[in-house]
Length: 129
Image (cartoon, rainbow, N blue to C red; front, side, top):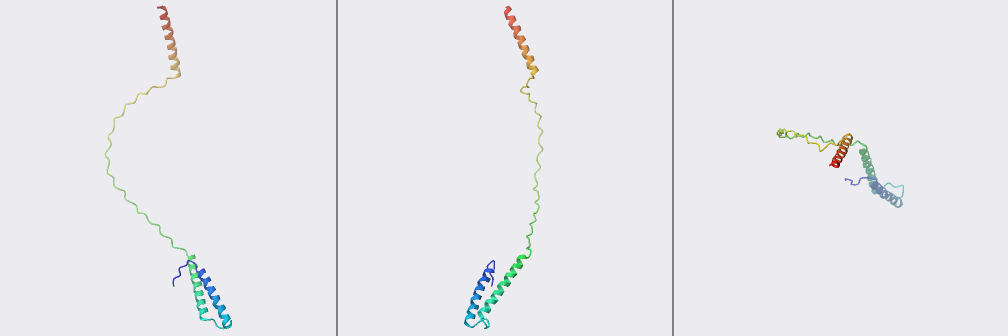
């Protein structure tokens, strides 16, 4: 008879209650010095079997468990790739003309001085005429 419960303790407890009740009934009706009744013997045998089953389960639980083997991954073969056509070499582009380099401070000062001189000379020429 397969036992479906995870723990046998509850069943042992219920059996003990029934056994105690059977012993109490036997002791009151026939006396304590009389041999055990058939019901008591059956309950004692059932209790012994339950305790043995519990001990076997506990011993089996202490044993090391077998671990699952790790699956071996098979290496996939790379898919053959079609050879690519060689790229056509492009003609090098001409260097772009720079938008304008920033003039240095010395160039700015020199240009400003030239402009001032040109303005002075222009003013003098116009005054003479």
